[in-house]
Length: 369
Image (tube, rainbow, N blue to C red; front, side):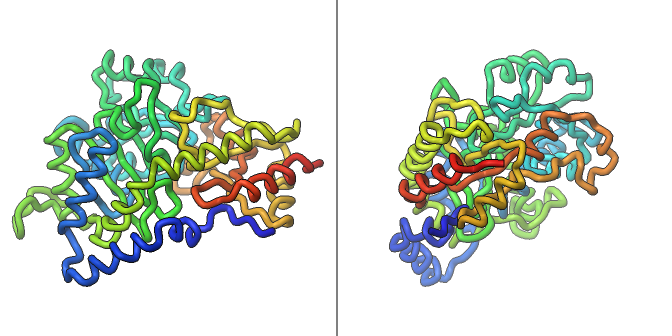
């Protein structure tokens, strides 16, 4: 049995008829940018998230870039200011900060939660700190009440990287993406809410920020041929908006299937060589990924691949060890390093069958060094 890490073809097939109808509707309309499909999706996604505004853009990285750029244009931040950010994240989070001339302050995660360690944040706050950027990595809620209190105490903006956590909730019922001052979302095809290509969005309830983001992402123009900022072209096209609006209707249902798969993994994986992160309530984890940890991670990867199971490492080289940030290479971040050396993501998604999940578990339980 071949079990792919994630079959995008199978994911699309779940709602194929509606997706085909939506794409055909856009093609036949003759209107392909900044039209009714964008308006509809932005309205529906903002309502779903619980924010006042949603601004579609080209991808998740751009969404984060525009948030920080907007704060710079608004005079809230300036080049050289500091942003607290988890050291264990996909590099896009950090690229968005440095792209705007801001300084990332890398904070280790907790090993049991894999999210930023709120107990390490306050000691790193300085007079130059302007924001805390949390990342709901792997689909897990990263927000804590302590982080919210620190933002209030030091008058910091709270920015959410919600690229991997569409539909995830905090304990008070708010969805991630509506908890902070602004949030960036990615609709990369493999995400819980994925397009048929690149796509992203910013959500916020700040009208000034929303207007700045929309303007920046449209060449810096609020009115045709009139340019307030030196912006760029970063827009969500009508086809992607239409597809996303179809899939949004099924996001809660698709996440529930991911949670069922995760529950099976937690209940049935039984191998002392394989460790799992702490189990948290379903509503706080939409399981974009299911990470496991093993001292012989590469051997486990090769073993599963040899037996037809696709896996991916998230992420083999942490940001502070990348050549593009080579000046950070001497940083001592042991928890981040441990995750990079031991993490392996196993199959999970809205289309995987439970019999396939059982086969993965059987292989995992049979793994020996």
